[in-house]
Length: 434
Image 1 (cartoon, rainbow, N blue to C red):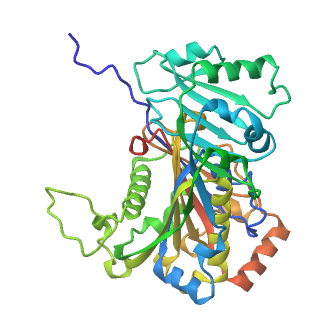
Image 2 (tube, one colour):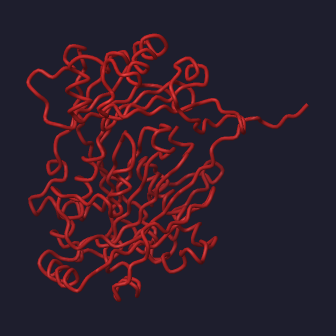
Image 3 (tube, rainbow, N blue to C red):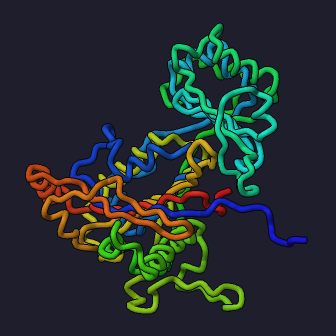
């Protein structure tokens, strides 16, 4: 008798990318194909967004008459009980799915329950094997964390904005039949309308509960800041396609991401005042033994929780970058020239197991740019390394023309340097988010 477990959980991966931010950024015209905005656009339904930055930079923004909480649009979401069939009929289908732009996701465990979602007119059904076979719809198997080579979960995707997705058409009628005969239970949904709501929106007939997403602001004092938080871009020298990440580089990146996760949780382990028995916790902030006095600072944490659209996240990131450049954070010490945005997504099979990402923003003074950037040489943006159970990374430098370089010099002179570099870590099949 074998005592070996038959379950094989998906291997957790971290895909890391580094590069330069564009010289000009507008909150009304956000980049779509350039990193790190491309990672944001490709992510799934967002559950929470957390910004961490030195309180000195946050206070500098307030002194300049800028409030990050008020700079981004007010957002809200709705909780509603509906059947899948009701999404496919009447004004709801015509106004929200055919012509509108909404994001919806049903409740449930991504690894066990049936989960339905709608994003940009695409209906995604993540089903168990039994329900998938009963629906009679065409789909494909997805990773479920069960026995190897045993397909127990399936994903069905349908673009409901296609002209063929109408009553009387064979493909659409099959989806309606499955919603009526198989997937006919009442479900709790969370709903976001990405367009300006009308006076009497169709969702009102289902009696939704409206919730405003208000940011929470908290000050964490006496935080020990690791040196890798401001010079993490330096690992780009040893991370390349030809040279796989060294163990030291992997360890440094993991320690940085672990520190940011603990800081997001307001763990006392990252504070200089913490005293704990090593038997209970052996964690210590990396690189905190040298120049300890210079690495202690207060950190401001802003957090939004609810169903958040990716468009709002892109606006938040652009606003954050622009304000650091206007406030001239170069007046602060090198260890205080950093910002971090951590986003957690609802884990579903439709977003390829991506559970969230962390974006670290840094100023140029923290690390000199590589030589290929100064010479205007661009590395391929498709080059990336993703190692099972380890950290993969690639250097992603934008192509800089002479005119763009001159514009960047002018922008730096007028508004200060601000953040100019980024490190983006994308979490895939992360066990902590499930």
